[in-house]
Length: 226
Image (cartoon, rainbow, N blue to C red):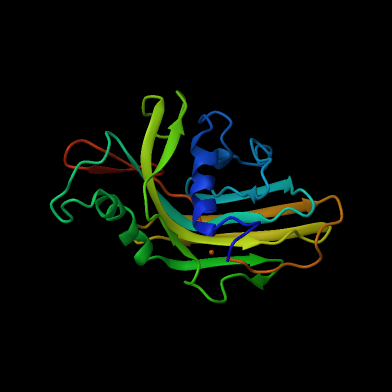
């Protein structure tokens, strides 16, 4: 189901662009208290970051009336250098790239997401979003992958949740899970809505925070957050 007219697949890729376009210093993914939640986050949908593994507890304001989009568990493959052909899928570099990240999501476990105690994954795994084309990631010089600054093709896969604007007041958002490679995260966010917004919530869609970069002619995979 689209959110403000944008498909959730497109939003999932925009979330990665938002997160990886930012330098490692001051990146919301490394936020420990919620002070970076608003960084470059002024679009029509408010993105919520996960973490780099382990447990995070944060508090931040959420703009009134703006839908939220966040990760339960996800993965990205950034191609460096550009994707070569591969043996398993000759002529299909997209599928080759997905082979580096999707198996870990296929074997995910303990995926969970609640808002004020309400289960947001009632119809899991209906909300998986998998790239069907390469999209570009523009990395700054100080980036989370420690790659040279520049634009790189990427693919992503993951489970995402989208929510309509929350009612005014304080809300507790909890999400996390474990992928097939043993990467685990647990996020607890206290969300403060300072102005009247859309009462209640509507479940629109299901993400998190694991990344890979791929490099070399044989497509070596490197865990980003380990």
